[in-house]
Amino acid sequence: MEVDVVEVIEMELKYCERCGGLWLRARGEAEVYCASCAPKMAEFPVARKRRQAHVSVTDSVAREGCCDELFAVCCEGGNA
Image (cartoon, rainbow, N blue to C red; front, side):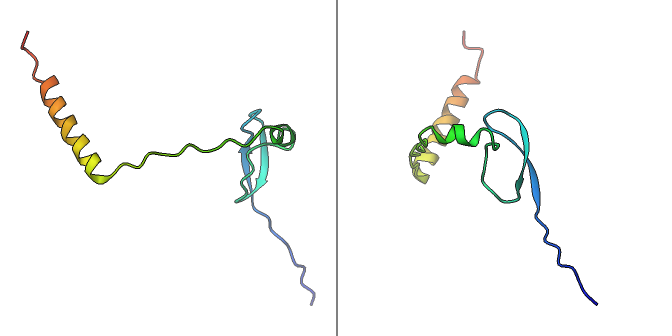
């Protein structure tokens, strides 16, 4: 008895982030542009990611305290 081997490739529906067209890509791939737009977008320089400012826990707690005080002052009302 002979068994045929079947290869299964999972695909997902994706929209092109340049033209908005729908296309299929292999599941788990990172491509964001369709085959028509990929060469055009490759001509542009790669954008650098912005560095995010680090907020410490103490800064966050201090900010929350300030917001609570501001909320209390702004919500009193009736002091015209």
